[in-house]
Length: 141
Image (cartoon, rainbow, N blue to C red; front, side, top):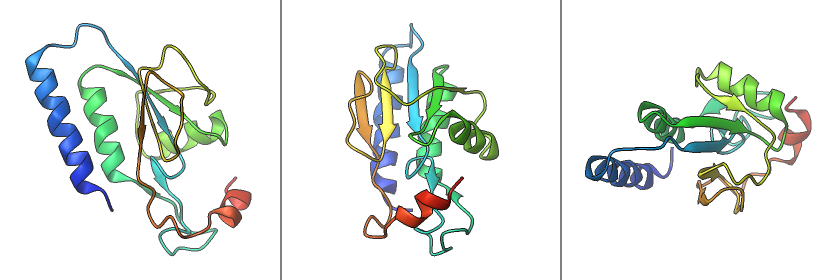
């Protein structure tokens, strides 16, 4: 998937920071589902009702934060059930699920859109952004 260089560089920087100073306080890191953790079927050429696939690069970042002892929050504009469903399906435990909204207790938020949801917001590159998600969004539940 696209963006391997960015995530590799991100993880290297985070590891250097980790070696420079140990984590004293656990952070709360939030990840959006659609086009962040999950690559929609329509983007992969699987049609509207085909199989959605994990975004392994973003999941590697999530796993890094988990390994450092940080709390993972999954959320989605499509609701908590949608976030829980894909978190479980992709085996991302342990995580908590909550409504997607600005929150002072979220330290970092990863999302495919420009958002202001956390203290630090990281925009994840959408794959094949020229492909419309409109029909997929209507039929995804």
